[in-house]
View 1: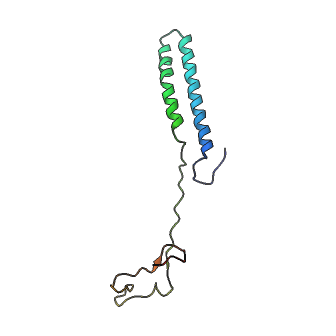
View 2: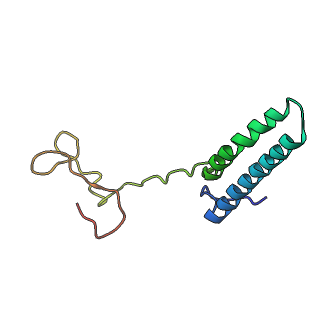
View 3: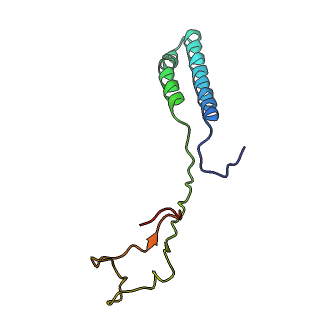
Length: 120
């Protein structure tokens, strides 16, 4: 068994191999049920006949189902907010709140992206 260190889904080829294997197993059971319908001469043969009729539908639904996703989730990376300048975080207006622009509203002195070409 291979242990994974990521929460990424398995590769497409591995998922396809798993789905093909499930389909072939289901169709093998269907073939066995069909043969048992021909061989057994008791009321149980009708159970095998019903299974032989519904297993193709079940096999196709199982084969078309996407592979199981990993249960663990990758934790989100927290966004670090840093002031634009060392004095912008401590500057306050007359009422003790951060000083605003010309309209008196709060000034955005925090950046959410570390790229230097981005300005507010």
